[in-house]
Picture 1 (cartoon, rainbow, N blue to C red):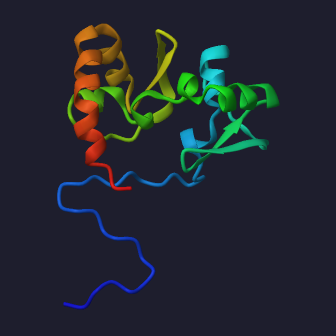
Picture 2 (picture 1 turned 90 degrees about the vertical axis):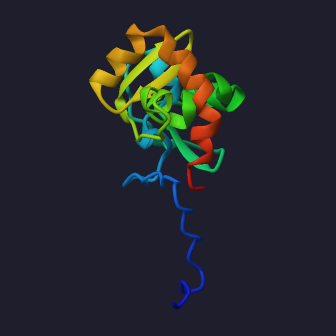
Length: 143
């Protein structure tokens, strides 16, 4: 069986899940992570206010939001690397929709569906389960 052409990344191992690249290639699909907490809504970032952090390019709606993130990224980065929090609780890395979110105790959580969001918010045990599962789920993500 012939090998892969040179220059291609290694394929994920059996059982790994590949996170799909978004068309934009930006973290949070180009939405401003700070605005979720300040404005309570998904706010598109602008090309003028970009920052490279953690191997991704993040966009912000303002220079002030970019500075806030630069100074304290752990405050504004989404929980579970932006994967659906309910999916993590179920033991899977599931891509999320940046419009389906909740800020709980100053932490941003993203979800794939409105039902997943409702389940997570209404069941405190899912938060603890997601926290406990995250290390194993993180290990399944091809990087």
